[in-house]
Length: 440
Image (tube, one colour):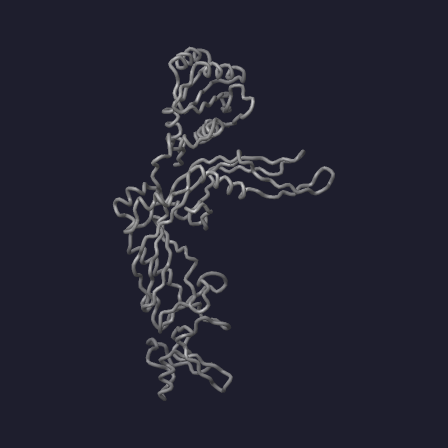
């Protein structure tokens, strides 16, 4: 459910757009807004039965009087409406209520005050509040099953080559620590049509589009992160923190400091981002058969901020140990699964992330626990012992030469065994490996 605070609705036009959005969501009919020379009609709703005429008055804490009702009644008759509605963020005077009752004998007039408006908005999926003051941040639901999250972490290493011991036998998951990400989730609507003198060049119709802004006021990297966590429902984070649901070191004071950008500034930042995201150059051919270019930039008044939420995304730093060598992975989860958002484990040889780009496979050194890209023909980051096939990193590889030109890479155990005068193959090979490989 979206949330709207009336103290952030600037002027009558934004209130008018809010009411139109509520009517659209309720499916009352084809909704059209009028901004200039409305003659008492702010919104028109085309229904199968006929036209409904709506007048909007954004007057929180004030009273709407009899003249407004009379003006709406006149507009309803002028436009051939079957019904008139006055919507206000305030309340109606007794005279206005009585006058509406009298007029309804011939033309139905409905008065929608603050409490009725809140009920309609709730049915439309919008939570209306007077003020944003004291609004509590919310958090997307996340898994609390530590055993399942540990298993997900181990499963992320399942594709790594590891011999003679399997990766599951040499890897373990250590301590998890919560590292919450604070962000503003902004939803906006944008409707605008760009035309030349003869053509419609571009139409933008976006409703409920999401922009994630981090605590510093920049766009939050990775839209897929929001898509992933938003599968879970939102919850009041104050309750979760008070119950210790996010672990040690997280408190409401820290959250209050993290959400330091005023809401009106967040709104402006989101408007700027929405305008940039939807700006493009359109080519078109004129009647004179000449090709033109037009920069289509949405106007600020076409962007309507629907909802601003202070959201917390539960991210965790998890320590993974391979033969005692630790690495830290960054994890997020929803109520169903876990996702790693660190781009992959860095290869200890080349520094690039394992799992990114063309070099996707990884391997674990069975001597020291280093994780590298898997062995390949040229410029390999990891190797396999030519004698026992153990997976090893460059630091644990001993290079020997055969006939001067040919190199043989052995693990330390096989190299030591060979120097001692024995067979190249040491006793660390797995059972059933068969005879040692002696040729290149």
